[in-house]
Image (cartoon, rainbow, N blue to C red; front, side, top):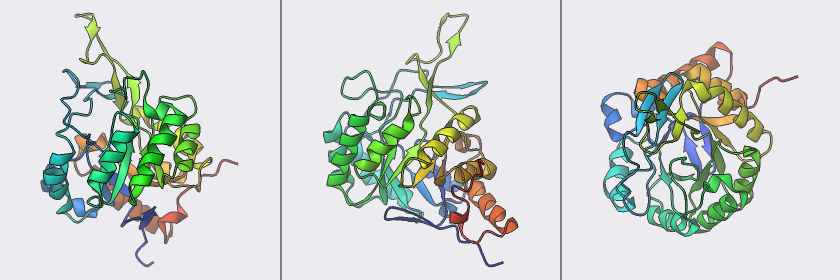
Length: 304
């Protein structure tokens, strides 16, 4: 059998394989620990227009059900990102997707213009559960109109591929995905973390400084998988799946459910080589099953 074709196209973005490192889980220091060049893409940690100090500590804890974090989008702002972080990631030759977040659509638009064509694509973080946008009591990705207006503003500001990252903390995620599609998103990525909390019973206080945080890891995989399958059947644009993907078997579940590509997140903290191993595992699966093109996996779930 000839070497399987794992290449994927998301909007204008061309990837050698469907495996991406998820935002906030993969830094430039990982180049000493794993083969970054073997990945389809890297999604950089979310950047905002101005520096953010993030939420009060403790900000990360491990629970019996997964990792709980409330980082609060700590970052040094887009200027430092463009001068230092982005070049340090781009040196590996793997496409780098800039993840951006703002308080409103104007900030998203400004960020898109600032990034320009320096990144390979934009992922709009509409769904970080640890911050509130514009003083509202909800996330952009919890509001169809807010999602539509934000994606539309960015769409008008950039020619890059635009990916809308959605929140699972909604009643019907497919309605939010449709709003993003109608506004001009090239793809949707889902899911971000689920809202959760942990309690210190001796101190009788929440463990996290922010009280609540976002739960990730294997515990959320079945929930995320269902949402990817639901959205895949409701939109025409590609779906990028994430949520508890620890290895290639998890990734294949998401792809069979409809994900054109996948992101590995929490697994990177357990094993920095997890994303690269996931890409190798998908290729081996294709060889074993005589699948010549990775598109032959996407959405092939048999439910009847």
